[in-house]
Length: 261
Image 1 (spheres, one colour):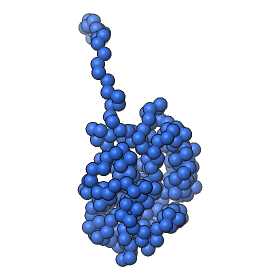
Image 2 (cartoon, helix red, strand yellow):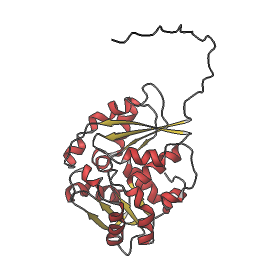
Image 3 (tube, one colour):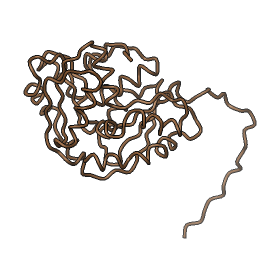
Image 4 (tube, one colour):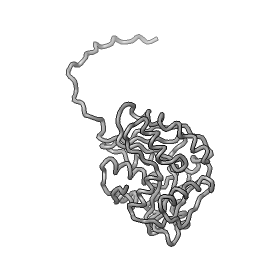
């Protein structure tokens, strides 16, 4: 055994260093699914900065993506939010699951997260998508999801209930969100071209698992209309809630718009 060299004396500095009020000025919490490959990466790319921190908690989820399995996440929402910087305030919290949000309900999700983080602004992807579409003043839309028909039905009902005229609705029949994350952005551009109805004024692409935020510029070029996606809209919504109104057209036309509640 090698002999250990003598340890140095350890000196305690008595002068306290200067402390900032916060390590970063703004804090965004992200409650993601255990299986999610995409949301955290997108939020690091679009939201995180020297001014804004993104803090993530993951909650249990098991495929397949069915309304029943999505609904099972509701009891975990408060505990998940509570794990994000316990006893510290956040400027916004996003629950990053579009399909579960429409099944559980925006109000129920807000209540569950605010039970752990009282008064925090809560964002869900369908809520952010709706706000994004409202920012363009459009009502006639096409919708694309990677889900099955069964899981897509609540999505159609959500947007119809909020006053949107759905010109077309297309789904891809996937049941596993890990496979949804493997769909190439280039494929999404081609799908946008195929599924957008001629009378639709915008396209909404649902699902936080999809790498759709990367494809927004290509999709908008392909269809000549605004494209709003789950992660792109959620990140935009969270940034606007943090007071960041900087136009960033590289993330799509939406990122040139102010938040429309």
